[in-house]
Length: 104
Image (cartoon, rainbow, N blue to C red; front, side, top):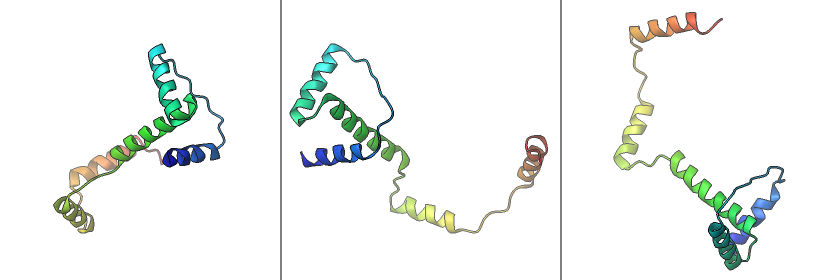
């Protein structure tokens, strides 16, 4: 129960100026009310806290790259290796792009 209390406290520190509205079925609303009551929260606080938790987890999973030891070693080697020479076709394409797209 304490972990949820901390989430609510951190939610209230930032000024709330935005509105979030959602239409739900009667069944879903009753489910949210029941779950919120079990945690001793309002429905709004319950929904916000759990939506925030889900959003943070999803973003964390999508923005974190997990590598095993071999992948990590290879990644570091590539980062630390001297740069390769740029192929002439790529240099030419870059030059053409700058002439046509980037107005200097």
